[in-house]
Image (cartoon, rainbow, N blue to C red; front, top):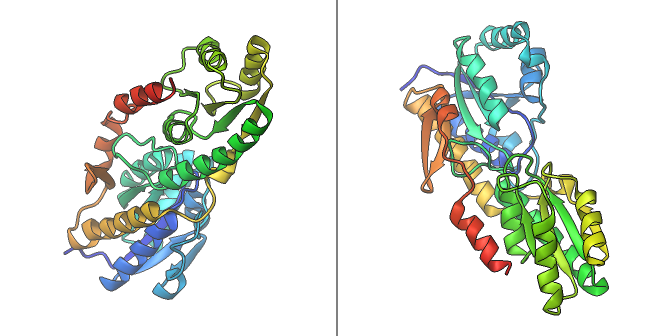
Length: 325
């Protein structure tokens, strides 16, 4: 057993569905272990300015079905300054916070490492819709975001069918293409463009559309991960080369919003409870919670940054090519 009596929890970076489930589970698990919980507003920004709220079972009881994060979030430029990090660490120490739970993505993880240098006990929970953290097979928010993209694309396709168009749908995933891959496969996209596989030209997309056009198809769907290339440029090129009217739909932040799926609620709950378990009951800290072979595990934060096992799944990618023939 550890000597931890008070912990703080924050959410940082882009919001992700399931964060509230993690906050809820952290609060329930800690209080049941006799540990009080302080919620930090606006991520690392709130730590610098000490914007906080005492979390109780009553005020987190009914947040499991809510998207976003009740603690709000931010990407803190000020936290990059060592002086501000020292202020944040001092705030924790001055208010008798024994440990900090950070829920967020890769940038949040790197921020947590800076806290370990200030002798702050830290546990991280991976929350990012892009599923782009190398140490874990799953990150909170991905399942809900992929489902939101799928449902939106299904609706967009109805219009494409009615008008005989090609629609380029841009989804989130600047560095990782999992949302595009899953949403594209789930909606039978004619082409899926991923940052991991982008070769710099549109010809393969045009060839795929032409093959289907010759075969008698009159509507087409291209799913594009944001940041790979400009969606409007792609649609214009398709229309120029094929003569098929082409439109663009950018899904944007609808992928971040909405009620979390059962998977994100469950994983958020499991990860939140596991964070408290290893911190309070096992006395281990400076760790990140992870999923490996669908089992909860944890790594040292520094070790997690060195793990390189989050390459795009080759079998999934090959299957996407087979199913789009």
